[in-house]
Length: 385
Ligand code: NZQ
Ligand code: ZN
Image (cartoon, helix red, strand yellow):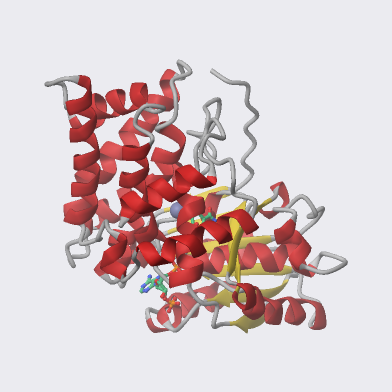
């Protein structure tokens, strides 16, 4: 096992009827800003419950944070925090709103050009306004981690920043908040959480048995619950298992002491920035292709994945790896998520531009052994078509 440090300060409050707990979790004298996305949070009543819990505190609202939150939009919230002297943020939404709140929290407390936060991938952040979250979409794990992905629309740059200062102080995880999600977003959540585990699991073995088995357990859970998650019924247990799986998939636990890949995500971010494909849907096209192109470097893990996640034990090594890749693709397709870039109108003629953006963003040596050069990314994109 590799050396590691693990320090996750986010308090999780999980379960039905937990939104009222905001009253204890937000300081009583706080001047709060509630951040949200489009109209889903108001329509399904979450925003109303949040206001009720905040009671007589001074509360402002900032709505309109779009999926793949933009620097341009978020700077409006940064101004509001400064003008109104607000000292606590509350994100109500999915990964986009929570990521947006992380940026606002860091930028409002930053002296200088806030885009530096993104250019330095978070190294420039030395403090942030405290914030909490009410999660409405299980997918990204942003509710319990220190990362955020922000897009600058003017340059089509979708970049990641990470800082210990932007862990949420708390996150409310009430699975009933997912009842209003369209099946498309639930499918996206399953794919995103699955791929987060794969980015930390499908690398090379370091004899980290606990992490391996937790990862395999999360992958199997996601596969097992998927059919119930996608039914329109208000299936509390399925949604609760999805929510907790997605949080554990990216809260630092399974990354502790193991190598990490993340190249599927970095290629995926460029596809979202250039072609507007939803985050999880980029992953569903890139991951199976990356498994194919990098099958030699990942041979040992692919065989372990085949056996322990999919019970594939028959045939030659090459056959078992082929079957594991096919099972992964089949799982995504079974959720109604396409696994080819052509399904989004992206063809060979678009690959040069993706490679150019990867190069512009310094993404030239990705993966667990920095072996994903621009040439390897090109081959992965070609295999994704
Ligand atoms: O905007 P509203 O009206 O709220 O609608 C949203 C949005 O259109 C809707 N929605 C959310 N909760 C709902 C709901 N609709 C009905 N009922 C509810 N309860 O869902 C749509 C998508 O929301 P969004 O927040 O964009 O989705 P997601 O949670 O998948 O977040 C995606 C973003 O997170 C980033 C992605 O790159 C992308 O920008 N990621 C963040 C990560 C992190 N911080 O650790 C890691 C991930 O790999 C990912 O990159
Ligand atoms: Zn993701």
